[in-house]
Amino acid sequence: MSFTVAIIGRPNVGKSTLFNRLVGKRLALVDDQPGLTRDRREAEAELEGAPVTIIDTAGLEPGDKGLSARMRKQTEAAVKLADLVLFLIDARAGVTGADEMFADLVRASGKKVVLAANKSEGRTAEAGLYEAYALGLGEPLAISAEHGLGIGDLAEAIAQARRELRGDVDMPVEETEDIASHPLRIAVVGRPNVGKSTLVNALLGEERMITGPEAGITRDAISAELQWDSRILRLFDTAGLRRKMRVEGRAEELSVGDALKAIRFAEVVVLLLDAERPFEKQDLQIAELIAEEGRALVIAINKWDLVRTPDKRLKELRETCQRLLPQIKGVALVPVSAKRGSGLDTLMQSVFAADALWNRRLPTHALNQWLQATVEAHSPPAVSGRRIKLRYITQANARPPTFVLFCSRPKALPDSYVRYLVNALRESFDMPGVPIRINLRKGANPYAKDSG
Image 1 (cartoon, rainbow, N blue to C red):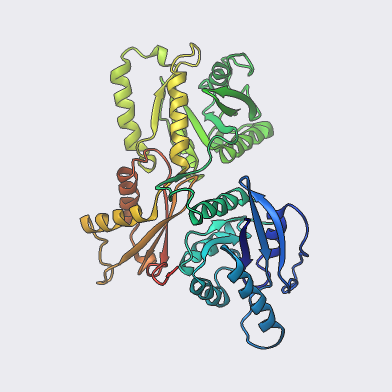
Image 2 (image 1 turned 90 degrees about the horizontal axis):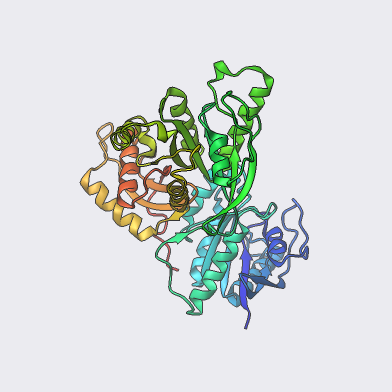
């Protein structure tokens, strides 16, 4: 028997576009004009290897007369027939009064719900995604039906709901992204002449990149694919990143831009330092850029074969790293010799570990137990004589781990206390070296009224 999913939401949030995307055919009319769909439309699809019946519904509109009432009746009938309700909002518009009204209707149905925030491409949709938590329908999935973004995550959420409702599996305690389904993108970056191309060649096992003592040989971000311990990787060798005042000529401006694009495209960035001159100002600026971009980071110390007291020197460098880069506390620091090919196995294991942490998702109940204990250990300071109440936390995204914290006065919470929370999260859940983001939102527990 097929599993039935009803897509519902107010007009023009993209229900028919999502319907077409899930069934793999252009069956429903799509236009910017709201209210184009007026009847229920059904089609069969296969998601995660299982048959699913998808129902496209008319946009829910307030009103109890005429056409709006008949459209609403059709939608309510679809909800009654469905095993799962896929509730869609427009992330760019944010949560509206109509969304809140129909969320109440969905909760009252008692049906299992997957909440999706459509049109989530771009930063303008971020606020709407966080607002969606307040609907009390669970964690919203960021998707773009038009561009196909997040559809894999949505299909997995539907498949997971199907398994739970049919008793096939238990709820997972902790989730991670599917990290083995595509090549892991790794960018090797650093100052000029630290040995980036030599390191890439050593990992590839061949002289693919031109190397030499002259700085600036590599101009473009060059990629190459390889397999390491059964994992497919795509390596990006990049031009050396100089300080802006020392960028010389248009060609180097372009190559620096290419290196920055490689950082933004990568999942893990290996920052290569020179063992004889580590942690120079430019190294720290590059590390800060990587953290700001939210990439997973591993620091490799090259030319380690030239170090005379390796154990003592490594201890010193780790202490220096902790002091100079507190925002990525615990980042892996791996000594290598690209020229001799030593330390590569340790480096790649650190890359895989960083990627796993970057993809990690923490269960909401564990996060809120942690929040209660953390606040009890060190409560937020009173600002202008008023206490700030921290009420609820949930993870909004992985890659990097991003959390939404609901509190009474988000603008008044000091940055120092947010840093305390980040460090406590990192320590309590064993997440060294990965960028962690906490977004503050005003409000109480957004799921307090969730009865479904």
